[in-house]
Image (cartoon, rainbow, N blue to C red; front, side, top):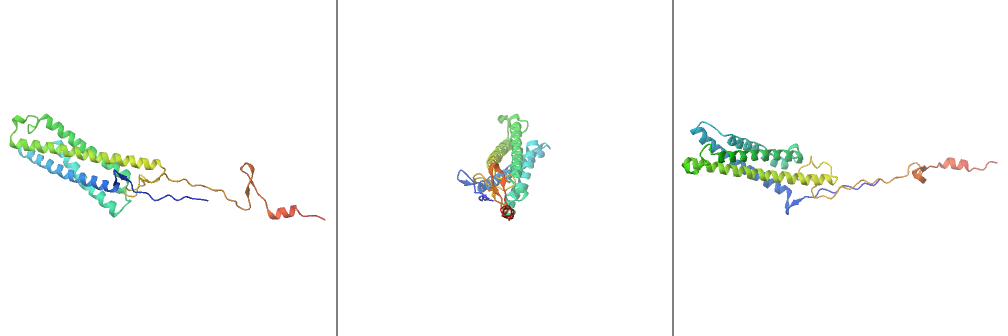
Length: 229
């Protein structure tokens, strides 16, 4: 039996940058953007509750998305180094969670745009009626929606890139791609080799015509060939 061992996974790069560095850069950037949006949403909420005792859905959504980002992304970065191969490091888990976070940031930005253009509060749609407080608040809303959209884009692009690379590796017959971590995934590895089975003789049998084995027994052959007197 001949068995060709599978070569170790090779580290894949995108635009000449190792995928692990891209991962850390994307997750770190998302954390920073979430911190900025959290501060902006808190400022807008403080102003609205002070002067009108109300809060706005887009601000609450930004706060919720930022908290989820803070609770999960730093843990994903740390656990990849401390416990590689754990449940939080699985590619399928990472893709699904980051895609969910990107949807939250998209909803935050879209809701903020609707509020800003409607001019329901702070007269953001009517600059001629704004005072200094309203101008500051409208600028905060505009910045909040911008950072939310940027967070949505980078998380979505990274998730789609990871999905394409993992699908390509799985199509090359590599097993365990979806449950492996980004650092250990065989993204750049060639197609997995097949196992070649070479038939061997057992018990004095040799291959015969038509795939049948023609066996013989030494003792029986001697007996059959004996001369009887």
